[in-house]
Length: 396
Ligand SMILES: Cc1ncc(COP(=O)(O)O)c(C=O)c1O
Image (cartoon, rainbow, N blue to C red; front, side, top):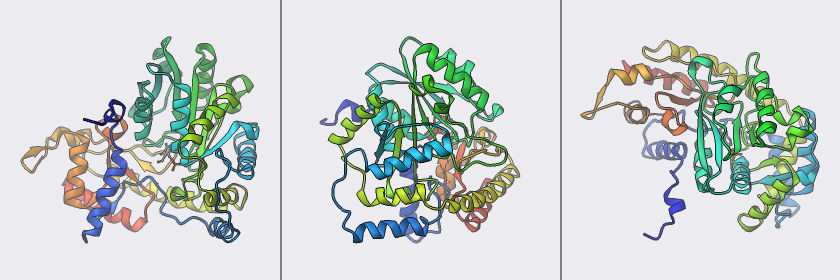
């Protein structure tokens, strides 16, 4: 076999696979409703699109500096100062092809083979595979439904060993919607200094929070701890710009320049036109974020209420992002038969729901959490109503 061991070890993204399957069924004329995709159903705001059109007309279509244009880095510096109370220089910023590439570059820059990376679970699908790609070792820290999937510092400290190099925090969290407690984050910041551990803070959902939840960037807790942190964010979720592929990272200059080296030899600069549009996203009018957040909030409440009315399902009210993450263990315990086989795990259940109810959602196992399903509510209220109706019917 010619395929390298490194690639053989990587599992494909289940989220992308199920989204693709739902699209295929749609093309075949089936009326599929998708709760699978991790992206807003809104269009990119007009002012941002206009900026991209101007960039094309002005011929801004050449290579840019590999780590991003200075204008965008300056906009990111301002954004981090204003929203997150963190002070960075442009030399401490890199712009990449989505937050996904920032994460990949960071993990490859920091980790040597065999280093341990702490990863609270349930977690976003790509972290584990990116860690494995770097030949580092993911060390899972379970968080629990009963504790609203919040991470606590005691659990983190228990998993630290002399090999621990990095921890990845994602708050607001995909898939659980948990927003980590400010006091716990402060304690985790102390652990970073005590044990000399680096921390990736993936803040891609920071603007999408509900009720009383508050977002805190750990890097804002002081200069000393800031040296241990790589803050990652992007325009995908807040500005409905998933397809434009712009993400950014801010951190110590040495790490950022390591990441630039990887980027310089792999993708080079992220799309020049999308970079121009992202400047407008970050410094232009921000009111569309609130419009989108309000719509998600309404859909969130509706979805959670409906799910909790279904027998065998219990669902917490997520504090952030745009996913419901219901516990379906009771349904799995029933051992429903489908096609002569028992539905025994979340993958079987999501497959059954896709084939029979034509509703696409993601099994908890994709997020290292068996016994759950993830449903995105970043889709129209009409589809949410119809999709939940179908799920309820099929489970009866
Ligand atoms: C937690 C998390 N981080 C990062 C990303 C990647 O975002 P981007 O589109 O900027 O690559 C996603 C996308 O789903 C995500 O859910």
